[in-house]
Image (cartoon, rainbow, N blue to C red; front, side, top):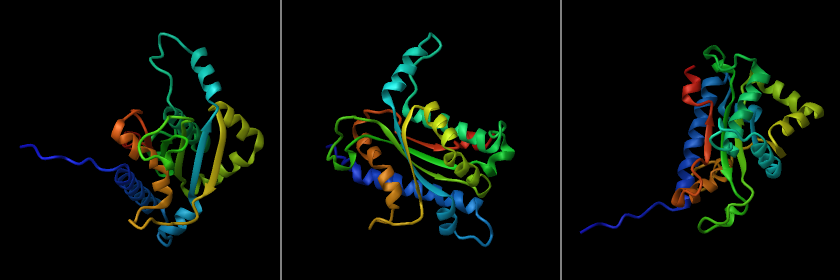
Length: 218
């Protein structure tokens, strides 16, 4: 007689991902903070919650304009997130940013796909307006360079146009609020679509953690 196997709920899955993201952030900070620095002060100084909203009509035009036999599929929003990360690293660190000796300078970036209304879903709803919630933890050495880029209106506008961004909402990660179950509220909010998507897998790729372990190993 087969035993019934209960699948974890979307809430449980979201909690598990949020907890893992929290651990990854904590590991990164411990590896990069100074001897007399604390995890919380490093996070407040170098952490940002960044939401990327896309100009989807422009993205579609770009995909249509670049169609060729060499392109197997259009880039997803998370592919663009990876391109954006690499571009920022090149701007802030230099053209050889991917070399192993620059590992201590590269930021941690965790990006999660989301859809409109996902916080109210009981089960997965309409996949409308895909966007990305992300947490970035910069290193002390490159934080100022990023601040200068977004403060320069002309450079920032060109940056958004390059990646077909409609909005780029940037907020300081200056608190460490937790859920009753212990996960960070910011990471839980970021991971809420993953919990729903896990049960039906309507989207094959719903988060990225950068740099990847392969990147970090050179």
